[in-house]
Image (cartoon, rainbow, N blue to C red):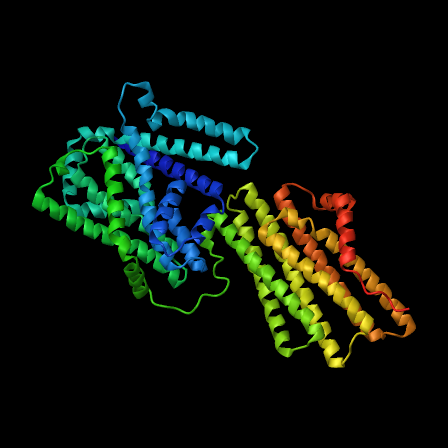
Length: 584
């Protein structure tokens, strides 16, 4: 054992951590918004939460990423604290899967097929397959699969380097003397917690312990306290993620820490107390990689079984340790923590953009109502909503730009593009609602009313405008490209209605049936109505662009207007929104 063995150990750890990070990030990207949608379906059923937490952690191979995600979702108001408890416990069980995979390195057999189960034997093939997928595939998903394979191979290579670097320790008497200190279980817990806290990966610290166990120098009595301490050390990542978040999110980290500390304390008392009474014969036996994985799993399963019935008590403890605060602001869920899982962040941005669209629609309908039934209270509501829409656009736009810089998939890039287009259109619809409100106030203050024919024509146009707004918002919320194709014919119908109403208004001016003052107001209304329908068209096209990949907006509109389906839909809409016959 020399200084170069230490260098190799450090290099192996570096490869291990890099491989774990690469694999975890690629798995998260492949999962997309499914993780967030699954978590949102959580109920108060603790068993369902437990299974889901274990399943997601196994899928993304990172309990730390799982817990950080929970902190971000609670900080956003998407999840309640009670929903996270089962998920946290499940993630502790799910993370033990990595130890079982690493334990395969200890397989010894002359059989070719059995030897192929050893990761060091099959991981080079996975690395080759991964590189071929990354370099040769045009599809993002296949490249992500390739990165998962390469990440796993790097992880296993790091494990082999660590195993090789520590193998000479078995022959060093000084190493044996150091290990005697670990007969003290409290020291074992402390060492496990510190090492895991420093490298911020329980999987990596368990891997180091498994590599040391392959020297034959680690007994069960030494390993079990270290494993308990590793569970405490992994809470460091959660603590770091809880900096700068609201109190509810900090309570998630408190629950995570409390769960592991209580489990370790009970485990130490019961296990080592039982050893004093029953003198477990296996305590001084050397353990291997499989034994480490087994102890890791048993400890987490038993701790979960013990504390799951006390979920409410854990929540009360967290609330007592972290006192109440005022309600979080409406936009708090644009949490920087969610940038660590870009697909989840994009899913939250989608939900927020849908809320923005609903607010824009509400504001426009309020402004339209002002034209026939003016109210100062309604005016204040319109102005307040417009301020909110401006905040939505500013914060969403900035956040989406940040998300797009965090290695998102092509599907997510197209979603970000759709959202960026839409928030601008929603904000402009809010501006037009404010313009309509100004026109309504002018009519109210001057005591002006439109003539009977003009009012009837405006009602037809308003009906078409409300329908296109509803249809555009529905297709955007559902990301339904088929429904979006019905928007453009209706937008063309509104353009023709506006043109016809202007023409009729000019005729009425010439006969003196309408005043120039009302004409200016009517022209403003028509202009705003027409622009709102244009924005609805933009929203629909952004949905089609997302679902169709690289389709050109202008090419799509050109092809659509030349299609027979467009003409038939247009004729149908023109028949539905027919203006009243002009008086002779």
